Image (cartoon, rainbow, N blue to C red; front, top):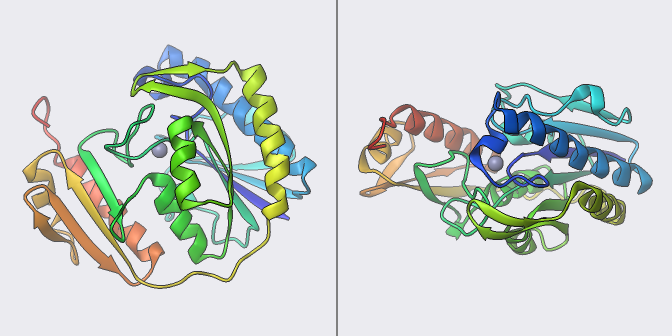
Length: 275
Ligand SMILES: [Zn+2]
């Protein structure tokens, strides 16, 4: 049984603020240890549940956050940026299940450090008409490869979101959202136990499904008109409102590639102060 962990940082134990997840800051140095602790707790549970190989794909920011020297030796780690499938690189390698660890609520939703891909500028994303977090988008890509989502960890809002897009997955709330920048946090000694037990339990669901293929539509709303205009330069992407664009793609993988281009072009068009 080969399992992949897509590891994001905003939903890690104790994380509640920008500097906690911005590479190079003192707080980031502290929280990357807690983040690594969450990942190790997950690996321990997956292996206890029968996993024979665990691939950890770093999915946050520079994608150089986890401490390889502290990683459970039963796992392998994909680190670094510029991966064709971004947060989901590795999903195409024949894995039997995927874990969304340290995930967070989507842009415009309630949740600690809620956003979808861009930390700001995007106020909402819809997948086939449904408000979509990174988790929902990535779950659709996993489904296209026949890979079930086994476990999702993050704040309580992340777990509520996951219960809708991956009802078969086990959820672990490592913190309770109070605001976008505040949460009631459990200490790592407690979240590690919760994550390990949930991962072990979640392995019961591991095993490939029939791939769910087909076209998808993504719509993106920005907080400023010029960002939508910038994104609409991308072939197949159309303006659908003063601050919104939409596009259709023949598969979820193609949709996410187009989404990546849209976010890259929009973020390049953001100006200081006025955005
Ligand atoms: Zn994220």
